[in-house]
Length: 117
Image (cartoon, rainbow, N blue to C red):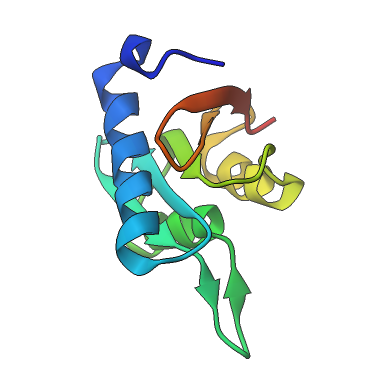
């Protein structure tokens, strides 16, 4: 368990944004990513009949569509206890294998930090 108050302010910001997206949209997951310029992209789970995307993959897609060249960090707020391989792969594709991915519960407390690797 990572003490959320010990996080870098920019990392705490993306956890807060991810948590807000989850709550505001009533979806299972909220996610946020920060690109190389400090811009953030926030998303929730997409669950359409014809399209299913996790919140983290949606946030990465939004960053790419907006012209981001790299990622500094990512955060996902969910009730699950792991970050899926597919989600980590999306972060890795844009940010590289050492990009940190913060995993937080619905209350915003960070339970783990993994790399996209």
